[in-house]
Image (cartoon, rainbow, N blue to C red; front, top):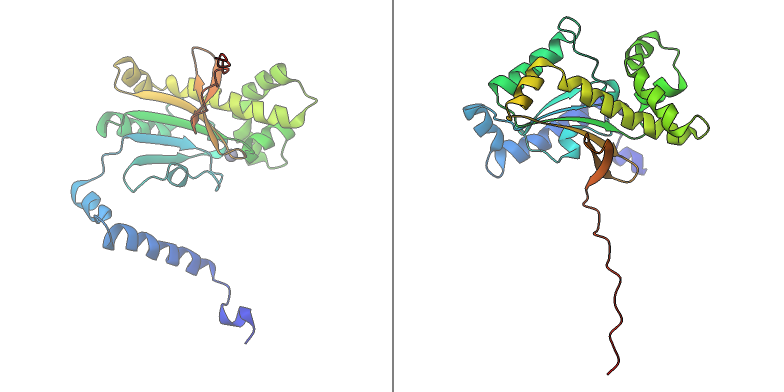
Length: 231
Ligand SMILES: [Zn+2]
């Protein structure tokens, strides 16, 4: 019997239902039955993660998170527009619930490298819906162009991705429920950049106006060895 007759390709539904069965086995039947506890007691997440819709950077996967650890919100390019109560009603309501009712401790805005949304912003797109959305980050593109110029396309893409994180970080800090919680010292807000190519996480430091790698921890610089004196 040919090999592919023994193992016919999975249907799309099988891929999902088999994944569900593995999840069920892990969190309902084995170990501490985490999902049963969360259903009984409710979830008390510490985090709210806003990241891109890119399927390679799902926050539950990237942070290896168990159920109940974090609220998740995905929008193209992790772009957060300036606050407008009518236009961002859903995001504002979700943040308000997470911050004021569920008392989360940390809000993370996470952009990533090789981002298709930022690519559409830098290189253009014929899709008017995508264009309308990514143009919200037009200022990030302008800042990146000033910083790295136009000739090195890869450098411009990477810098626009980072500038988009900075722009979104600054915008979300102006959302009233975020601003109030930060002022009262009960919420930390972070702007992170996931370098998918290198598998590294970088954090934006508003004081230094720069990113630095936070995971994996960069190795400390080696002190030059002083030669031992000959006896
Ligand atoms: Zn993306």
